[in-house]
Length: 258
Length: 229
Image 1 (cartoon, chains in turn yellow, green):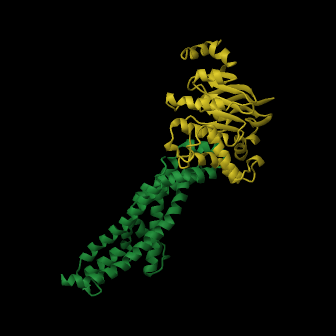
Image 2 (tube, chains in turn brown, yellow):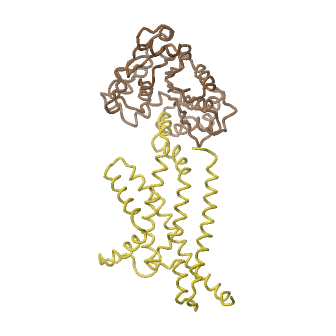
C-alpha cells in the first residue's frame, strides 16, 4: 500500500497558479527527488505537504488516511493540522534553527513540548531522560556528538543543516521532506550534508528531496519527479529520467548539468 | 561659599523628597506601560481590522501630540470641561493624573518597539516551530519571545532613559517632583530664597539615575549576547 498519495493538488497565489494538478504516489521506504528550475513549484509542493500552505484543490493521503481534502473543511481545522503535520518532517533550505538554543536543545525542544501534551500519541510521551538520550543519539548519527553544546552561530552551515536534520528526525516523521537542503551552503560543505541524507535511507523512512544536485538525486533516489511551470512533466526511474529524459523540457533542463 | 555649605544639606534633603516622587512616577509608569504596550502592540497587529485601526489611531494621537498637553488634558479635562473632577485634590490626585498620562503615553511608544521586535523575527522561525508540531502559543513563548527581547533591549533602554527625564514634565500640573523642589528655592523654601543653583543641581540626580540604568541595560545586553539573531 502506498504511504503517500497526492491527488490533483492545486495551489494559486493570487492570479498565479503555482501547482497545477499535481499527482504522485510513494511507497514506504522510497526516496523521491523533485528536480526542476526555480519557480517550478517544487518548494510550494513541499510546503503543501507540511500544511504550511493549504492547497486550493486536491487530496493528501498518508497510509490510507485522508489528511487533507480541499473539498472537506473538516480536514482543515488548525488543531487537526498540527497533529497531521507530525506525520511529515521538513528540513529547510536556510536551516531555521532556533538561535537561542544549543544544538542539543534545538533537537530536544519539540520532543519536550510534545511530551507535556496530554493529547499527544503515547509514543511521544517520553521522559526527560529518554528525550535527552534520543537527542544525543540523533546528533551522534549526524556526526555532531562533539558539538551538542554549541549555539547555531558557532557552527558552520553544514553543521547547522545537520542539526536541523537531527531536529526533524526527533519526532519520527513518517515522511521526511528536504527543501533544497544544500542550496545555502558552500560547495565544500554540501558533501557532508548529502552524506548524512544518504545515510538516512532505510526501509521505514520515506523521503522527498527537492534538490539541484543531479548526481545525488540519481544515486540516492528510487523515484525522480521533474517539475516545470507547476506541473509534473516527467517522473519515474532516476537513471531513466536523468540519463535519458524523453520530454523536451526535461532534456533542456538537464543539458545544463551534463 | 560659607552660605553654600549651609544651604547644601537643606537643599539636598528637599531635592531627595522631590526625587522620590520622580522615582515613584518612573516606576509606576514602567509597571503600567510595559504590559499595556503589549496589549496595544497585539491590537495593532491584529487581523481584526477595526481593532488594528483603533490601536494605530490611538498610537498616532499619543505619539503625535506633546506629552505636556496630554498631562494638562488628563488632569483638567474631567473637572473643568465635564464638571466631574475625578483626580481628587492634593498631591495624590496630581500623582494619579500624571501616572495615567505617562502610562498611556509610554505604552504607545513601547507598543511600537514591541511590534517592530515581534515582526523582525524571521517567518522561518515560526514555520520551523509549526512543522515540529508546536502550537502558536508554544512558538511565541519558546521560540520567538527570547529573540524579541534581545532585539528590543536597545530601543527600550533608550525610551526608559528618556522616561526618567520626561517625568519632569509633570511639573506642569504642579506634581512635587524634583524640578518642582529645586524651583521652589528660587522663590523661597526652607528659609532659602532667590537661589537658582538647586534647580541646576537637579541635573546631577538625573545623571546618576541614568548612569545606573545605562549600566543595568549594558548588563542585560551582555547577558543576552551568548547568541546571535
